[in-house]
Length: 368
Ligand code: SAH
Image 1 (cartoon, rainbow, N blue to C red):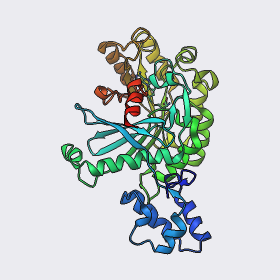
Image 2: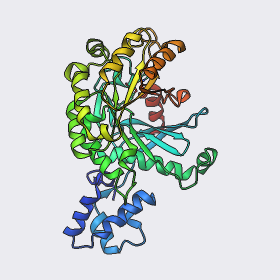
Image 3: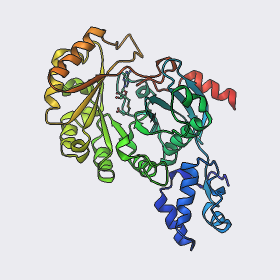
Image 4: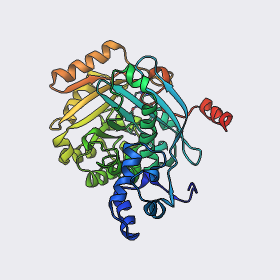
């Protein structure tokens, strides 16, 4: 059953299983049964579902690989109970996934690539470079593995005051990688995650964050027009943005914002703007004024994230007063704005900190 040439079950949209049923002359309902077993009951071997007849088991599941990303390390934050998973994929690549509990919600921050090719100068993941894209099964697999962990850790749910049946409710593509640089896999993963017989997440509870990959954005919005978009803006001044975010040279901010202006998701849900505040780089009132100007006419909510310092000789976090002034200016200009302090600081799960450290690689060797 576990030949690695076999197709990974978690990369298959239900539609394709339905097609397999038809080809095998089986009732289509078996596709639903497999989906429910895998995603609702979280069975590690979904073909063992009681209501799946033997013949369907043999014809549908003979070539399915159901291996999931395996957690080689799990860290639980003492401060906010966020959980960082270090997952090992079939080829030995490592990716990070972060579970963030928040009142009634449980948000999972998933990775879409091993490393990242965008090379934003202040981001730790950016320094790894792009090693490879994840496939849809590896993205969906992060969700299934995280849900299995939750199901097996009732004390974690209990300590948060959440019901025992609670599972992940929201997904943010804000882990390692630029999701829109891997748009086909991300779009398939979203199709599976929102399947009512699968994980059943509402599309409006899924946010895809981008540094401004315009081609990918256009493709994704064609397939899932109503998915939420977060834009990592970080500087409203084109020339300055190009210095800290090389992607801006290919797709200038103005072009990206123009595309978003027309998008139904912007009209329905608005756009989340992520703005990492970096001392002396993008935190002046001039930047705040420009930010108001470039976002005018768009329905936006702004998250200000004081920089998590990864290389203080290059970039530092602004003083608390500078953060407040920046926030107050935006607020007075009528924008919805929040200061977000990253979760999981003690377990290096915060924005821009997702990087596979040497120690993790060493740990993996000892586990082998
Ligand atoms: N590539 C996508 C998804 C990553 S989301 C994107 O750029 O949107 C991770 C967020 O954390 C991005 O907004 C990123 O710019 C931000 N970030 C990166 N390094 C950071 C740091 N050191 N401190 C705070 N935020 C950072």
